[in-house]
Image (tube, rainbow, N blue to C red; front, side, top):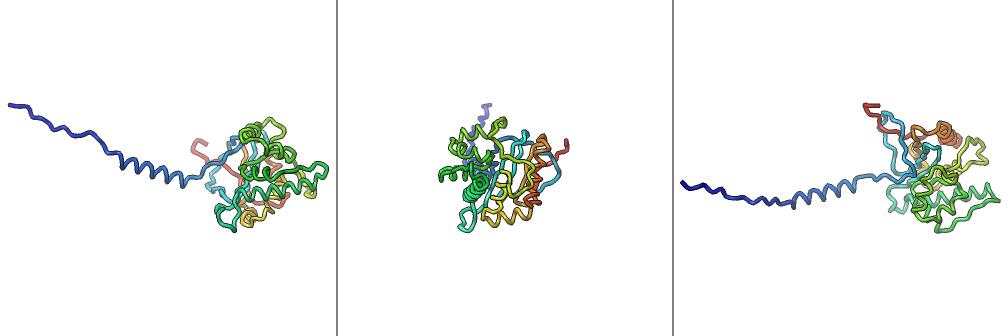
Length: 238
């Protein structure tokens, strides 16, 4: 009796459909994801059970490093293409102009001068944190040099100076920046700050209490009594 020959079947698999699905999934996640902005230092926030998300638009974020250095980030309206809204770059440029004017008024013998190029550079920086005197030098560095400087927490020219000042006739540098943000001209940001949605404080769980206290105390001195404290969601292990 002859052997039964089994017909060989092709092992070729058409991956065209799979490739299409993969590309569609990648496109979906790229368009719907919110990318984290670069920060000068990694901060491990304390955990809590709150699931309220901090807005990504019209918000001033205050970052306090474990070493007690203070940084500020400002985001404008999400729809920057609308001529009636303030995009992040436009509002940062306006904030810088107002803040420098106020600083120069208070320090007539130590004024700082910025060029249009300096203002344009500042408008593209997500998070800033150097004393006013260091601004001209910092803004004229390359981005690589800026990243190297602002991530070095041991430098005296890194971090926005802050203290327990209560005399708003002579505000400290942190208070100058926060006033400039509030009066930037963006009504949406100002309204969000009034409601407590436009200010977020993010501090490391090991940050010295004194620095965090200065930040909160300064906000209250400026009548900015409503703000969010950023935390990590508590897990079962916590």
